[in-house]
Image (tube, rainbow, N blue to C red; front, side):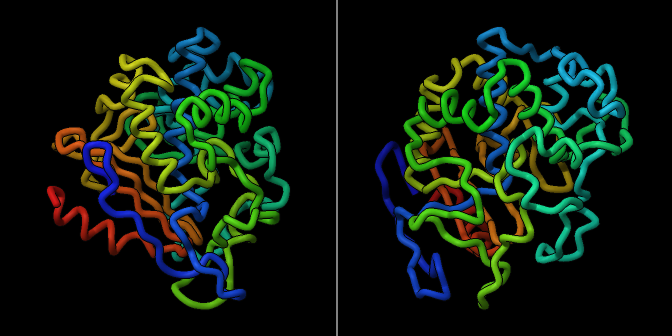
Length: 312
């Protein structure tokens, strides 16, 4: 936890590798699941700032004959705001247990963004574009694909050069789950046991999830974001302006950012098999709170405690 640029608390608990009794430390690198979406949004917005993409750019203009069920009127802005209406490859409401095997294609085939095309294909639209908010994982993979095709640079490299390097996030990267480096925590399905998430998630993430980071890097991120070192402040303001109410989750949503229903708090969030994560910034109190866990529900008790005492 940081306040006014000073770290008040930074600590680690539990094991990064249970089989070998290797402890988590404050330098451990953790998966962030859908926390990645915010970095995707910033990479896309950086391309918008450069003129490579526009918020009004249609997905169809870059897809060619791929993904024919994506409507002609779906734009980059719709995708960023989860208002595209496209079908999703994963219905999170239908997942009974986060430990279930839900990926519809073999996970080892998902290492580059282009390899996600079969995952995105064949899903009928669920609503007209901009008709309503509906959280959508496929939309953010599609954003990664559009960004990649617009500038001819692999998406993982775009996030590095446009977001993590300008932000000083030296330990943040898309890692392969089947060759994690020594500082990275394995993702565990439950609070005990040895079963990891390696067969549950893409072997290497894309626009909707899969980047690994540290608490220190997340602090650097917030400072860089609001200092205009990733995209200009007017773009940050555009991204953190509420675009939709999300009453089921007692929050609002901007362009890649979760927003408090009534205050100025803004945050990143991720939840998946073996991953739970939130990094929240409250401008009015100049505080940053980041909680990352390497098992599915590990972060939420602390996050609930922080939410119950927002001014502490």
